[in-house]
Length: 102
Image 1: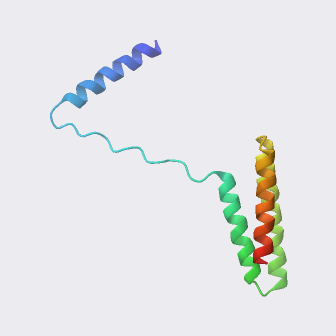
Image 2: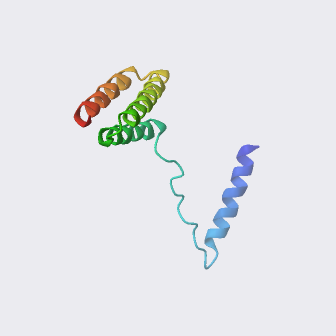
Image 3: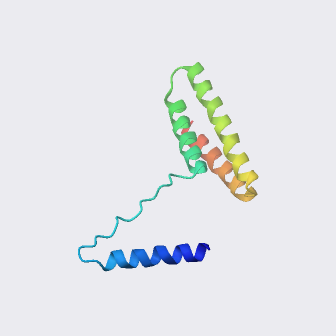
């Protein structure tokens, strides 16, 4: 049944595109944003930089606490997907980023 519905849609589309003055629809734009893991990495790095520039010790500690929470969330996401090596490498990368910026 699905095949006959698709056949009918294909025939209808072919008839439409063969008509004079046919303008094809615009290409579909990417509807996906960044993967959640990349978003978390970006946010972690942004917070580390913000913490490094902070002169208020209380604010700095609050930002670093948020960084730790996001890092845990990120690494758990990788591990839940079975990406243990990626989690390990990401953790090392983030540690280096912290050392270089704090």
